[in-house]
Structures are given as structure tokens and as C-alpha cells.
Length: 505
Image 1 (cartoon, one colour):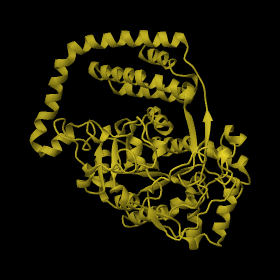
Image 2 (image 1 turned 60 degrees about the vertical axis):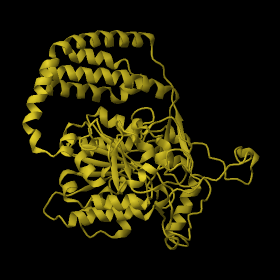
Image 3 (image 1 turned 30 degrees about the horizontal axis):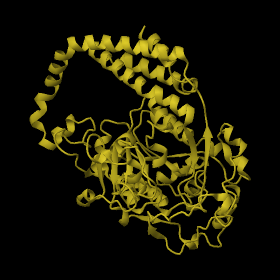
């Protein structure tokens, strides 16, 4: 009976959502319903489902009507993004059924709660009190916190915690930790390289799913990460030939691969980490024009989520997911990757990169000055969560919006003040007059259709440079012939499915 009710509730969601996630959602409900037996577990299961219905169903219709789904390149200067519009609308019968079922269930649950509240309090006391003296005050607060160590008790301000310890703590209760990175940041990747060498992390985590890796080369990366003797010219294709970045990758990514390899080699005979490549499997040697490239660009997030489902969730692994912040932040609720893996049964914890900027470029918050770096702070209930998300994440280089950090993520990684952060670029010598430099130029002529200068004299520069004021003439591309070339139209193949996956190299 419960399964039929839940199946009926799924019809409240848009048809496209049901087609993509309906079977997985129903299977997840059956699994949870079978595992959570008894009056109280079933009660909280339905409370969780109704809360999710009330929040997620309107968001799904809002996304279907007006959201732009971006298949974007990493944020290098001059690179455009492709956008795909969708439309849908809920039927009146669906809205009526949703309201009626929600009201009936809500009032039924209120009655049950009134009878069971004392039982729940007693159960909580029996499970917590005997252990109360086994933990110091800070650990006790962490145990009672829903963020499991990333938030303090309700009577105090949230305090920043050591970043590595906080990530390890998150994996005690979450099989999936999502990290929204900022591309090419030196300090961020120095910390990530240290993280993968920590025994507590290596013991708990099975996989690291990265955006900066073309899954066509999974076999070579598996051998390299395992410590085998693989020619660097072969394995570096994984991060040099990604679909999502036509320009040259930052050296921070190659360093991260090497750090994971070194960690595994230092743990011979022990649990090993695996890097899973989340970028689509396009072969640049076979991509000759934008139509060849279109399907891969259009399905970047879908393919990344599929890798997580097939290689992590299906094998009951724990994984750290690393992708650009723009793919992970919850602008109007979870993004495509998070929605997909939640429908498959995951309960991810989302951490995003951030700075000490709380408004415009010059609006630096002195409260960050006392924080050690790197550090992670919970965004639930504290002052940090009330800050504008886009200002903090983008270092004040884009206008602030109404989106709060607490609505965008679960926690914030802080690696230092905005003006101390460094971007690392590929050295000029590896591009100027080299076969790889020529290949980059060929790809640029495919997309976006014009060259971009990646030959820099400095390999390390400030991560967030002051935005240049835009003149009225520059704001109108047609009135500024000397400005950057216009964005090309999306290829028609953007609407095509991904081609069949070739054998891994």
C-alpha cells in the first residue's frame, strides 16, 4: 500500500523528471521502507518524503520552465557557454492531488507524533546518556550536531575546523562528499594533495571522481594511480584532453594525480585510492568540428553523475567528488549531479571553495582574519551561512545575488584571504611552438571559433583580479566591432545523445 501511495505521489513531478529518476526514486523508497521497520522509523520516513515533496516538486517545475542548463567550459577568459532551454507545466489535477495528499498525511503524522513524542525522548536519552562522559565537550557537541563535527552547539557561534579533520569527519556519516573547487587555485590544490596522503582519509575513501579527467583514458589512469610504469605522455592525455576545457589545463591537476599515485605507493598492501574520470569520453583526434563536439559538451554533468552511479554507488563505495563550484552549488536547490545521485540513494555533503569577500570587490570581512587556513566551517545556523554566496565564492568579481551560502552548500572551505590566493597557469614553454600548443589552437578554432592567448609570461598570478569597468559601448557587442568576437551559435548536435562509449585507453 505504501509503495502505491509513493508511486502516486511521483506523478506530482514533471514528466521529464519522472522519466529520468522515477524508477530510481521508487526503488530507493522500497529499500528504505524495507530497512526502516517499526512505527517511529516509518513515521520519520514519511516526514522526510513529504518535506522533500513540498520543497523539490515546485523547484522542478521552476527549473523546467525557466532554468538554463549550462554545459560550460571552466572559467577562463573569453570562453562562452552553451545553454539549453526547456519548458513544462504542472497539471491542475497534479496540484490538487499534491495538496490533498500532503494535508491528509500531515495531520495524520501530527496525531502520531503526539502519542510517540515521549517515546522518542526516552529512546534518545537511552542511546546518548550512557556515552556522555566518554567525550570532551567539543566532541559531545559534534556528536549531537547534524553536520557531525562541522557545526558547534546551538548556543555558540560556528567555529572553523581544520579542513582535513572536517572532511574525514564528514565521511563518518556520508558516503559521498562533494567539493566545489575553484579552477587552477594553488592553495586549494596544495591542501587536496595533502588530504590524499592522510591515512585516516585513505582508510575511509575508495574513489575520487574528478571533472578534470577524460574518461576515455580511465585504463591508463588506473595503471598510473596503482603505481605502474606508464609513460607520462599517455597518462597526461587524461587531463590535457578534457572536453570541458578547450584551453590548456593548470599544472595543479597533474600534481594532484601524482599525489594520489604517491599516496598509493606509500601504502602498498593497504587500501588504495582510485581516481575516476568524470569528463565525457570524447576523442579529440576524431573531433573535427563543433558538431562533433556538441553531444559531449551537452552531457557533461549527466556523464559525471553516471560515473558516480555506476562506479561508486553501485559498488557501495565512499567517494570524494571534485568539480567546479558552478556545477555543484544549489542555486535553486540541488544541481543535476546532486539530484541524480540523491535519486540513486546517496546522501551527499557539499563543501564549496570560498573567500573573505562579502559584497563588491573591496568588501572584505575582517571576521575571516582570525581563521587558520585551510579551514572548513559549517554553513548551517551561523553568520557565515547568511553571506551572499556568489560574492564569497567568486571573490567579489561578479555581482552579488540573493542566494545565501547556507542555501548553496553545507560547508565552506577557506584557504586564505582573497588577495593571497594564486592561480597557476601552464608555462609558456609548454605551449609556444609545441605540438600541444598547436593542438590547443586547433581546438579553439573548433570552439569557440577564434584564438585565445594562453601564452603568459607569468605562471603564477593573483586568482581574483579586479573587474574592469565596462563602458556603455562595450555592453552592446554590435556597437563595439573591436571587442571580442561574438559567441558562436550552439551546434545542432547539442540535442543529440552521447555516442557509444569506446574502449578505454
